[in-house]
Image 1: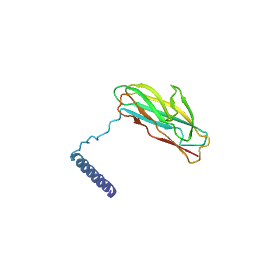
Image 2 (image 1 turned 180 degrees about the vertical axis):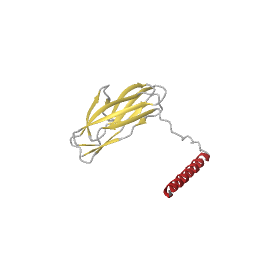
Image 3 (image 1 turned 120 degrees about the horizontal axis):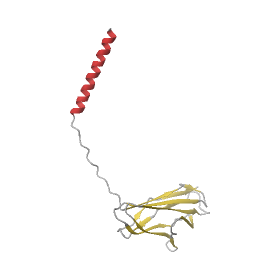
Image 4 (image 1 turned 135 degrees about the horizontal axis):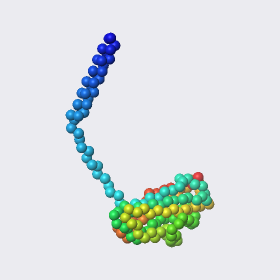
Length: 165
């Protein structure tokens, strides 16, 4: 009998604590969340991806370039450029699409993309081959720059780097 009374007393106390906690929680004035300020996306974004962070001499590297038009209007005259990095051969293998132009004096590859419609994503893959005499520990950084006649200044991608083993 004493155990039953004790259990009932515990249940009553727990109920009282639960009701008190609930009523205290309900009586608090809830604060409304203030919207956080955010930075709008630029009209054009560029990203480059690399299939592997390390390679040996004379090994193929595969890159993927992603260009996104975040604006609400088409972007015309889009060109993608990148400086041919040291540590790779002059060999460029692009998968599909138009072949890029190479300026021997500046060592810059240029793709003429044309117009990218509002909200569209343009992407392509290309491959470079590490130089046969690339020394161990050398790095091969690559980034792309994108320009458009619709924008006042070019946009740069992230930089990806391969280290020669």
